[in-house]
Image (tube, rainbow, N blue to C red; front, top):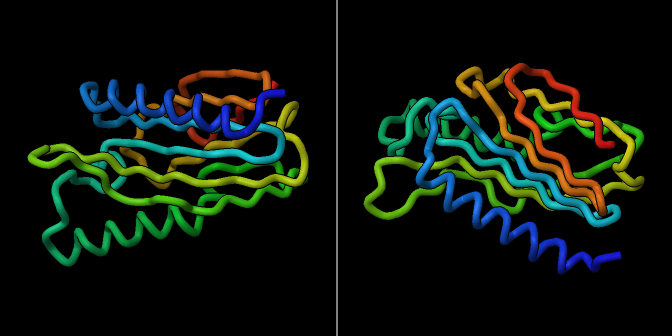
Length: 167
């Protein structure tokens, strides 16, 4: 079995490559979700153009925009279980690591990124994941990548809620 640090290194490299591609292919209405697990420990990264979850991409200027950022950030920090639902029998707990707007200097575009550490009590293989991003209607498609131990899966979701079998 691969050790967890190797998995995270591979996952981080994949995310870096994806982020580089995504930066150039900044597509409104799209988002990506990457989940990697080694045994019972995992990482989650959600990434989307800020416009797709906030309704704008610039630095928030008005109080309304600042409130919108706070509400979306709170949703990703505190309500992740409504967006990404592991089967309850797995008893998974996600801890937010980094949630917020990411932009390069002098860029007109920004991304909303949410990263988590996840710990489950039972293995994910053979279970089902429910993805429900209806709260963000501007997300028209979600590119989903999942890696758990030896299982690798990629798909694109265009309708929510969506059930994804982890087999």
